[in-house]
Image (tube, rainbow, N blue to C red; front, side):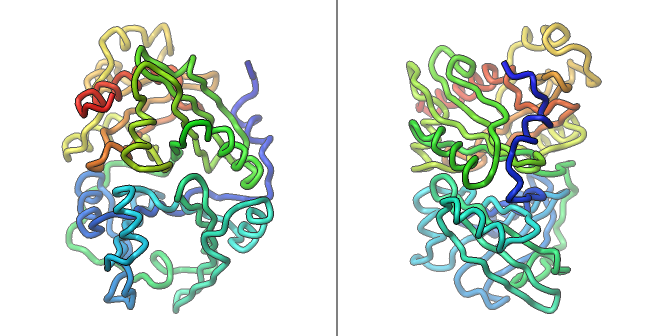
Length: 376
Protein backbone atom coordinates (compact mmCIF):
# COMPACT_ATOMS: atom_id res chain seq x y z
CA UNK A 1 0.00 0.00 0.00
CA UNK A 2 1.27 3.48 -0.89
CA UNK A 3 2.37 5.63 2.05
CA UNK A 4 2.63 8.83 0.02
CA UNK A 5 0.61 11.82 1.19
CA UNK A 6 -1.92 13.49 -1.08
CA UNK A 7 0.55 16.32 -1.79
CA UNK A 8 3.30 13.83 -2.71
CA UNK A 9 0.96 11.95 -5.06
CA UNK A 10 -0.23 15.02 -6.98
CA UNK A 11 3.37 16.25 -7.23
CA UNK A 12 3.90 13.36 -9.66
CA UNK A 13 1.52 14.94 -12.16
CA UNK A 14 2.91 16.70 -15.21
CA UNK A 15 2.67 20.49 -15.28
CA UNK A 16 2.24 21.25 -18.97
CA UNK A 17 -1.41 22.19 -18.33
CA UNK A 18 -1.71 24.53 -15.31
CA UNK A 19 -5.31 24.59 -14.02
CA UNK A 20 -6.54 27.09 -11.44
CA UNK A 21 -9.79 25.25 -10.68
CA UNK A 22 -13.30 24.84 -12.05
CA UNK A 23 -14.50 27.85 -14.04
CA UNK A 24 -18.11 26.71 -14.55
CA UNK A 25 -20.31 23.65 -15.10
CA UNK A 26 -22.74 23.83 -18.01
CA UNK A 27 -25.89 21.72 -18.06
CA UNK A 28 -28.00 21.05 -21.14
CA UNK A 29 -31.59 21.01 -19.86
CA UNK A 30 -35.12 20.90 -21.21
CA UNK A 31 -36.20 24.20 -19.62
CA UNK A 32 -33.39 26.47 -18.45
CA UNK A 33 -35.73 29.07 -16.93
CA UNK A 34 -37.36 26.51 -14.65
CA UNK A 35 -34.08 24.74 -13.87
CA UNK A 36 -32.59 28.08 -12.80
CA UNK A 37 -35.52 28.67 -10.47
CA UNK A 38 -34.99 25.22 -8.93
CA UNK A 39 -31.30 25.81 -8.25
CA UNK A 40 -32.05 29.21 -6.72
CA UNK A 41 -34.90 27.93 -4.56
CA UNK A 42 -33.51 24.54 -3.51
CA UNK A 43 -29.73 25.11 -3.49
CA UNK A 44 -29.48 28.83 -2.77
CA UNK A 45 -27.73 29.92 -5.97
CA UNK A 46 -27.83 33.59 -6.98
CA UNK A 47 -28.59 35.17 -10.35
CA UNK A 48 -25.45 36.22 -12.25
CA UNK A 49 -25.78 36.46 -16.05
CA UNK A 50 -28.11 35.69 -18.96
CA UNK A 51 -27.87 35.00 -22.69
CA UNK A 52 -30.83 34.57 -25.05
CA UNK A 53 -32.84 36.24 -27.81
CA UNK A 54 -32.75 39.55 -25.93
CA UNK A 55 -28.93 39.53 -26.17
CA UNK A 56 -28.84 38.48 -29.83
CA UNK A 57 -28.61 34.73 -29.21
CA UNK A 58 -31.16 33.11 -31.53
CA UNK A 59 -30.09 29.50 -30.91
CA UNK A 60 -30.20 28.99 -27.15
CA UNK A 61 -30.95 30.45 -23.73
CA UNK A 62 -28.50 30.30 -20.81
CA UNK A 63 -28.94 31.33 -17.19
CA UNK A 64 -25.76 31.64 -15.11
CA UNK A 65 -25.97 31.12 -11.34
CA UNK A 66 -23.31 31.59 -8.68
CA UNK A 67 -22.68 30.56 -5.08
CA UNK A 68 -19.25 30.93 -3.52
CA UNK A 69 -16.82 30.08 -6.32
CA UNK A 70 -19.33 27.77 -8.03
CA UNK A 71 -20.84 28.88 -11.34
CA UNK A 72 -23.61 26.86 -13.02
CA UNK A 73 -24.71 27.54 -16.59
CA UNK A 74 -28.16 26.15 -17.46
CA UNK A 75 -28.72 26.03 -21.21
CA UNK A 76 -31.68 25.08 -23.41
CA UNK A 77 -31.96 25.04 -27.19
CA UNK A 78 -34.63 27.16 -28.89
CA UNK A 79 -35.67 24.86 -31.75
CA UNK A 80 -36.06 21.16 -32.43
CA UNK A 81 -33.02 21.04 -34.75
CA UNK A 82 -30.69 22.35 -32.03
CA UNK A 83 -27.84 20.01 -31.02
CA UNK A 84 -28.58 21.11 -27.44
CA UNK A 85 -32.15 19.82 -27.76
CA UNK A 86 -30.90 16.59 -29.33
CA UNK A 87 -28.40 16.07 -26.50
CA UNK A 88 -31.11 16.62 -23.90
CA UNK A 89 -33.49 14.30 -25.76
CA UNK A 90 -30.95 11.44 -25.59
CA UNK A 91 -29.44 11.99 -22.15
CA UNK A 92 -32.02 13.97 -20.23
CA UNK A 93 -30.86 16.98 -18.20
CA UNK A 94 -27.17 16.63 -17.41
CA UNK A 95 -23.68 18.10 -17.47
CA UNK A 96 -22.31 18.82 -20.93
CA UNK A 97 -19.29 21.01 -20.09
CA UNK A 98 -16.74 20.82 -17.28
CA UNK A 99 -15.01 24.17 -17.81
CA UNK A 100 -11.52 24.63 -16.38
CA UNK A 101 -9.98 27.97 -15.48
CA UNK A 102 -6.54 28.25 -17.09
CA UNK A 103 -3.90 30.92 -17.63
CA UNK A 104 -3.64 30.25 -21.39
CA UNK A 105 -6.56 28.63 -23.24
CA UNK A 106 -4.64 28.53 -26.53
CA UNK A 107 -1.68 26.71 -25.03
CA UNK A 108 -4.02 24.29 -23.21
CA UNK A 109 -5.59 23.38 -26.54
CA UNK A 110 -2.26 22.92 -28.28
CA UNK A 111 -0.81 20.79 -25.49
CA UNK A 112 -3.83 18.49 -25.21
CA UNK A 113 -4.61 18.06 -28.91
CA UNK A 114 -1.01 17.19 -29.76
CA UNK A 115 -1.29 14.47 -27.11
CA UNK A 116 -4.38 13.01 -28.76
CA UNK A 117 -7.38 15.02 -27.52
CA UNK A 118 -10.38 15.28 -29.87
CA UNK A 119 -11.29 18.88 -30.70
CA UNK A 120 -14.60 20.34 -29.52
CA UNK A 121 -13.82 24.06 -30.04
CA UNK A 122 -10.74 25.52 -31.67
CA UNK A 123 -9.06 28.40 -29.81
CA UNK A 124 -11.43 31.36 -29.93
CA UNK A 125 -11.38 34.90 -28.55
CA UNK A 126 -14.64 36.71 -27.76
CA UNK A 127 -14.78 40.31 -26.58
CA UNK A 128 -17.01 43.19 -25.53
CA UNK A 129 -16.60 46.50 -23.70
CA UNK A 130 -15.38 44.62 -20.59
CA UNK A 131 -12.43 42.96 -22.30
CA UNK A 132 -11.88 39.54 -23.80
CA UNK A 133 -12.23 35.86 -22.89
CA UNK A 134 -10.13 33.25 -24.67
CA UNK A 135 -11.43 29.70 -24.80
CA UNK A 136 -11.00 26.29 -26.40
CA UNK A 137 -12.44 22.83 -25.83
CA UNK A 138 -11.82 19.09 -26.08
CA UNK A 139 -13.96 16.00 -25.59
CA UNK A 140 -13.42 13.71 -22.60
CA UNK A 141 -15.57 10.60 -21.81
CA UNK A 142 -18.84 10.19 -23.72
CA UNK A 143 -20.09 13.51 -25.09
CA UNK A 144 -18.75 15.43 -22.09
CA UNK A 145 -16.45 18.36 -22.81
CA UNK A 146 -13.59 20.13 -21.05
CA UNK A 147 -13.57 23.81 -21.97
CA UNK A 148 -10.43 25.82 -21.21
CA UNK A 149 -11.36 29.34 -20.09
CA UNK A 150 -8.86 32.21 -19.86
CA UNK A 151 -10.42 35.34 -18.39
CA UNK A 152 -7.52 37.38 -16.99
CA UNK A 153 -8.33 40.19 -19.41
CA UNK A 154 -12.07 40.30 -18.68
CA UNK A 155 -13.92 42.33 -16.03
CA UNK A 156 -17.57 41.58 -16.91
CA UNK A 157 -20.07 39.45 -14.99
CA UNK A 158 -19.43 36.21 -16.91
CA UNK A 159 -18.28 36.51 -20.53
CA UNK A 160 -19.11 38.36 -23.77
CA UNK A 161 -22.55 37.51 -25.10
CA UNK A 162 -24.07 37.62 -21.60
CA UNK A 163 -25.67 40.46 -19.69
CA UNK A 164 -26.09 40.88 -15.96
CA UNK A 165 -29.15 38.94 -14.79
CA UNK A 166 -31.21 41.20 -12.53
CA UNK A 167 -33.80 39.42 -10.38
CA UNK A 168 -35.96 40.37 -7.42
CA UNK A 169 -35.88 36.73 -6.32
CA UNK A 170 -32.58 35.72 -4.74
CA UNK A 171 -32.96 33.31 -1.80
CA UNK A 172 -30.12 33.22 0.70
CA UNK A 173 -27.26 30.83 -0.01
CA UNK A 174 -26.75 27.56 1.89
CA UNK A 175 -22.99 27.87 2.36
CA UNK A 176 -21.71 26.09 -0.74
CA UNK A 177 -18.15 27.22 -1.49
CA UNK A 178 -16.52 25.49 -4.46
CA UNK A 179 -16.50 22.33 -6.59
CA UNK A 180 -14.51 19.67 -4.75
CA UNK A 181 -14.63 17.03 -7.50
CA UNK A 182 -16.80 15.74 -10.36
CA UNK A 183 -17.34 12.00 -10.86
CA UNK A 184 -17.73 10.39 -14.28
CA UNK A 185 -19.39 7.05 -15.05
CA UNK A 186 -17.96 5.09 -17.99
CA UNK A 187 -18.89 1.79 -19.61
CA UNK A 188 -17.57 -1.73 -19.20
CA UNK A 189 -13.78 -1.98 -19.59
CA UNK A 190 -13.55 1.78 -20.16
CA UNK A 191 -12.06 2.98 -16.87
CA UNK A 192 -8.45 2.13 -17.71
CA UNK A 193 -8.54 3.82 -21.17
CA UNK A 194 -10.13 6.96 -19.66
CA UNK A 195 -7.56 7.01 -16.84
CA UNK A 196 -4.80 6.67 -19.44
CA UNK A 197 -6.37 9.56 -21.40
CA UNK A 198 -6.27 11.82 -18.32
CA UNK A 199 -2.66 10.84 -17.70
CA UNK A 200 -1.41 11.26 -21.26
CA UNK A 201 -3.63 14.08 -22.57
CA UNK A 202 -4.17 16.18 -19.43
CA UNK A 203 -1.04 15.31 -17.43
CA UNK A 204 -3.13 14.13 -14.46
CA UNK A 205 -2.05 11.47 -11.96
CA UNK A 206 -4.02 8.61 -10.42
CA UNK A 207 -4.06 9.43 -6.69
CA UNK A 208 -6.47 6.76 -5.45
CA UNK A 209 -7.88 3.44 -6.72
CA UNK A 210 -10.71 1.19 -5.56
CA UNK A 211 -11.57 -2.21 -7.00
CA UNK A 212 -14.69 -4.38 -6.78
CA UNK A 213 -13.31 -6.10 -3.67
CA UNK A 214 -13.43 -2.76 -1.82
CA UNK A 215 -16.63 -1.28 -3.29
CA UNK A 216 -19.34 -3.91 -3.20
CA UNK A 217 -22.49 -5.12 -1.53
CA UNK A 218 -24.31 -8.44 -1.63
CA UNK A 219 -25.73 -7.51 -5.03
CA UNK A 220 -23.44 -5.17 -6.97
CA UNK A 221 -19.99 -3.62 -7.26
CA UNK A 222 -17.96 -0.94 -9.01
CA UNK A 223 -14.38 0.07 -9.64
CA UNK A 224 -13.07 3.63 -9.36
CA UNK A 225 -9.88 5.63 -9.93
CA UNK A 226 -9.39 9.24 -8.86
CA UNK A 227 -7.50 11.49 -11.27
CA UNK A 228 -5.99 14.82 -10.17
CA UNK A 229 -3.99 17.61 -11.71
CA UNK A 230 -0.72 18.81 -10.18
CA UNK A 231 -2.16 21.26 -7.64
CA UNK A 232 -5.21 19.20 -6.68
CA UNK A 233 -7.65 21.88 -7.85
CA UNK A 234 -9.20 19.58 -10.48
CA UNK A 235 -10.13 16.04 -9.45
CA UNK A 236 -12.14 13.62 -11.57
CA UNK A 237 -12.91 10.18 -10.14
CA UNK A 238 -13.82 7.69 -12.89
CA UNK A 239 -16.26 4.85 -12.14
CA UNK A 240 -16.80 1.62 -14.07
CA UNK A 241 -19.37 -1.10 -13.28
CA UNK A 242 -18.18 -4.47 -12.02
CA UNK A 243 -19.78 -7.89 -12.11
CA UNK A 244 -22.36 -8.56 -9.40
CA UNK A 245 -25.52 -10.54 -8.79
CA UNK A 246 -27.68 -7.63 -9.89
CA UNK A 247 -27.43 -4.33 -11.78
CA UNK A 248 -25.16 -1.76 -10.13
CA UNK A 249 -25.85 1.96 -9.72
CA UNK A 250 -23.31 2.59 -12.51
CA UNK A 251 -25.19 0.32 -14.92
CA UNK A 252 -28.46 2.04 -14.01
CA UNK A 253 -26.88 5.41 -14.77
CA UNK A 254 -25.48 4.23 -18.12
CA UNK A 255 -28.88 2.80 -19.11
CA UNK A 256 -30.84 5.95 -18.27
CA UNK A 257 -28.28 8.52 -19.39
CA UNK A 258 -27.81 6.40 -22.52
CA UNK A 259 -24.06 6.73 -22.39
CA UNK A 260 -21.13 7.90 -20.33
CA UNK A 261 -21.35 11.15 -18.38
CA UNK A 262 -21.07 13.03 -15.11
CA UNK A 263 -22.61 11.03 -12.27
CA UNK A 264 -22.30 13.49 -9.42
CA UNK A 265 -20.87 16.85 -8.45
CA UNK A 266 -19.27 17.23 -5.01
CA UNK A 267 -19.53 20.72 -3.54
CA UNK A 268 -17.71 21.87 -0.41
CA UNK A 269 -19.02 23.61 2.69
CA UNK A 270 -17.48 24.75 5.98
CA UNK A 271 -20.58 23.81 8.00
CA UNK A 272 -22.21 20.68 6.63
CA UNK A 273 -24.76 20.48 9.44
CA UNK A 274 -26.14 23.95 8.64
CA UNK A 275 -25.90 23.41 4.86
CA UNK A 276 -27.75 20.08 4.93
CA UNK A 277 -30.35 21.40 7.37
CA UNK A 278 -31.00 24.35 5.03
CA UNK A 279 -31.13 22.14 1.93
CA UNK A 280 -33.61 19.75 3.55
CA UNK A 281 -35.83 22.67 4.58
CA UNK A 282 -35.91 23.73 0.92
CA UNK A 283 -36.99 20.31 -0.33
CA UNK A 284 -33.68 18.72 -1.37
CA UNK A 285 -33.91 14.96 -0.79
CA UNK A 286 -30.99 12.91 0.51
CA UNK A 287 -30.26 9.20 0.57
CA UNK A 288 -31.34 7.29 3.66
CA UNK A 289 -29.08 7.23 6.72
CA UNK A 290 -27.03 4.16 7.65
CA UNK A 291 -28.04 2.16 10.75
CA UNK A 292 -27.27 3.30 14.30
CA UNK A 293 -24.38 0.81 14.53
CA UNK A 294 -22.53 2.87 11.90
CA UNK A 295 -22.51 5.92 14.21
CA UNK A 296 -21.74 3.89 17.33
CA UNK A 297 -18.48 2.82 15.68
CA UNK A 298 -17.32 6.36 14.83
CA UNK A 299 -15.03 6.80 17.89
CA UNK A 300 -13.31 3.49 17.10
CA UNK A 301 -13.25 3.85 13.31
CA UNK A 302 -12.55 7.57 12.91
CA UNK A 303 -11.54 8.92 16.31
CA UNK A 304 -12.42 12.26 17.87
CA UNK A 305 -14.29 14.76 15.67
CA UNK A 306 -15.46 18.31 16.33
CA UNK A 307 -19.11 17.71 15.43
CA UNK A 308 -21.94 16.22 17.49
CA UNK A 309 -22.27 12.64 16.21
CA UNK A 310 -25.94 12.56 17.23
CA UNK A 311 -26.65 15.55 14.99
CA UNK A 312 -24.77 13.93 12.12
CA UNK A 313 -26.83 10.79 12.64
CA UNK A 314 -30.10 12.74 12.61
CA UNK A 315 -29.17 14.20 9.23
CA UNK A 316 -27.68 10.99 7.80
CA UNK A 317 -24.23 12.55 7.29
CA UNK A 318 -21.39 10.04 6.76
CA UNK A 319 -17.96 10.27 8.41
CA UNK A 320 -14.62 8.91 7.18
CA UNK A 321 -10.92 9.57 7.70
CA UNK A 322 -7.45 9.10 6.24
CA UNK A 323 -3.94 9.72 7.52
CA UNK A 324 -4.38 13.48 7.06
CA UNK A 325 -7.69 14.02 8.86
CA UNK A 326 -11.40 13.31 8.52
CA UNK A 327 -14.27 14.29 6.24
CA UNK A 328 -18.05 14.55 6.42
CA UNK A 329 -20.21 13.82 3.37
CA UNK A 330 -23.79 13.19 2.28
CA UNK A 331 -25.40 12.45 -1.08
CA UNK A 332 -28.66 13.72 -2.54
CA UNK A 333 -31.09 11.59 -4.44
CA UNK A 334 -31.03 12.20 -8.23
CA UNK A 335 -32.12 15.74 -9.03
CA UNK A 336 -33.53 14.80 -12.45
CA UNK A 337 -36.46 12.57 -13.46
CA UNK A 338 -34.00 10.02 -14.80
CA UNK A 339 -31.93 8.38 -12.02
CA UNK A 340 -28.70 9.99 -13.20
CA UNK A 341 -27.14 13.17 -11.80
CA UNK A 342 -26.92 13.80 -8.04
CA UNK A 343 -24.88 15.94 -5.63
CA UNK A 344 -22.48 15.31 -2.79
CA UNK A 345 -22.07 17.81 0.03
CA UNK A 346 -18.62 17.50 1.62
CA UNK A 347 -16.76 19.13 4.49
CA UNK A 348 -13.07 18.33 4.84
CA UNK A 349 -11.07 18.47 8.05
CA UNK A 350 -7.64 17.72 6.60
CA UNK A 351 -8.67 14.49 4.84
CA UNK A 352 -7.98 14.52 1.11
CA UNK A 353 -9.52 11.13 0.32
CA UNK A 354 -13.00 10.30 -0.98
CA UNK A 355 -14.79 8.44 1.80
CA UNK A 356 -13.70 4.87 1.02
CA UNK A 357 -14.94 3.80 4.44
CA UNK A 358 -18.41 5.05 3.51
CA UNK A 359 -18.73 3.28 0.17
CA UNK A 360 -20.56 0.26 1.56
CA UNK A 361 -23.10 2.41 3.43
CA UNK A 362 -23.51 4.62 0.34
CA UNK A 363 -23.90 1.65 -1.99
CA UNK A 364 -26.56 0.07 0.19
CA UNK A 365 -28.50 3.35 0.35
CA UNK A 366 -28.30 3.67 -3.44
CA UNK A 367 -29.48 0.10 -3.90
CA UNK A 368 -32.55 0.75 -1.76
CA UNK A 369 -33.47 3.61 -4.12
CA UNK A 370 -32.76 1.42 -7.17
CA UNK A 371 -35.03 -1.26 -5.76
CA UNK A 372 -37.86 1.25 -5.35
CA UNK A 373 -37.44 2.18 -9.03
CA UNK A 374 -37.41 -1.50 -10.07
CA UNK A 375 -33.88 -1.18 -11.48
CA UNK A 376 -31.80 -3.34 -9.11
